[in-house]
Length: 94
Image (cartoon, rainbow, N blue to C red; front, side):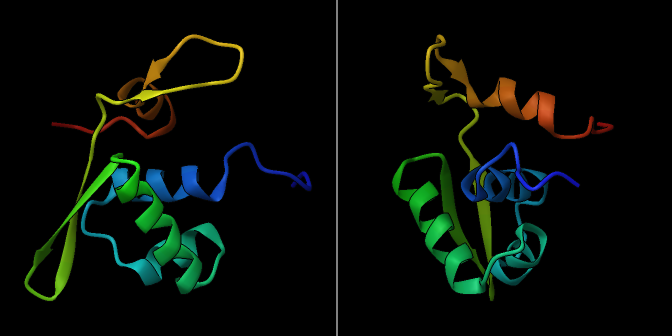
């Protein structure tokens, strides 16, 4: 594997949440390769920025990703989050 990644930890965390809206912080940390504390901070950042909403469902959190929000990419036009997720996540059978 190359010594670099194409996505930041914030991007990887967002992908984890988009793939499983009931994912636990512990599972995000394991999937991204960060501590649980770092995963908590990143999820809080995503919530504060409006990309993710969180609600309590019993003892677990349920997340919702705002796919309609734009992502400002350097030197490019705005792309909505839904378009990016469509490329990065595996296709789902509905």
